[in-house]
Image (cartoon, rainbow, N blue to C red; front, side, top):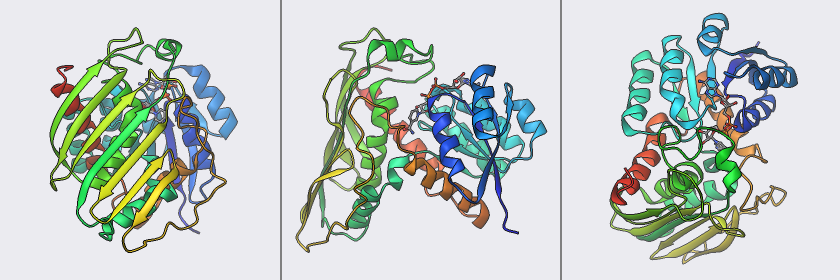
Length: 336
Ligand SMILES: NC(=O)c1ccc[n+]([C@@H]2O[C@H](COP(=O)([O-])OP(=O)(O)OC[C@H]3O[C@@H](n4cnc5c(N)ncnc54)[C@H](O)[C@@H]3O)[C@@H](O)[C@H]2O)c1
């Protein structure tokens, strides 16, 4: 019989439920346990998805036979959880951001490598058809020399969003604001398409919320390949444009709003294949959690990586790059 990967989820909040729904759609994986420090959400998720539940992940690791744990707790909690999972030789898939400081991210990478467990970081937009197609265009040199890459996340979160969890909007537990939480997806896509950044000049501000971290940021960046670009993120704008990615090369231009292609033109005519138009168009004010396709495909990739004994498509090292760039932006702006 084919091997089924036994999965646990830690953190039964908003994104934990997305993971549970995504895992339920995978034929090679089974959700066997969930864990949350609060018993209510753990019990309710276990009952909805037919698993065991725990309020202490140490106990869960010691009791359950697990191949994979997905980590869906607040952003600054990953290091301890990953260290404990690695000690039990359990492979780990961590929600973005990998953690909130460069040191903690590096420690997670190191502890997983030393223990011989696989480590992945969730960036589910890399698994959506339009960004995969764009990455093909980049890899196949359709743009010629890359000239400019711009990433924007212009959205809205009310003050009540930041007040809803004690960790949100705090430097100690969230590590940042609009960029570390919402904008990080676009930062990851920009790095995936354009390559590493070597210079940053940035400004941050807290314009409309009562929070410790930034709700608005703008940065100019220089890429290692000589191209230039910009990164902007805000949670202060109603009717914004959600996520916009612009890639400009000598021989082509692509502009994508959300997952909608606004412009796709190449000198060599590189076509945009017909994409699945049934995919949900997400509004600029709703978190990226209505649609589980990206999570399903990324968790599915992690399951295959375990079965095939290969690296996951988005490794821990890859996940650390986005955190490093965001921290460089904060540092340039004098925020940290
Ligand atoms: N990939 C995406 O699009 C996406 C979307 C939303 C959130 N996220 C990420 O997911 C993470 C969680 O966000 P959320 O919106 O689900 O938060 P949330 O507050 O809704 O849920 C977090 C849960 O973790 C539990 N928890 C906290 N510490 C714990 C611990 N030590 N052990 C076990 N459980 C613990 C809390 O009780 C809570 O139920 C954040 O890092 C966020 O950046 C990713």
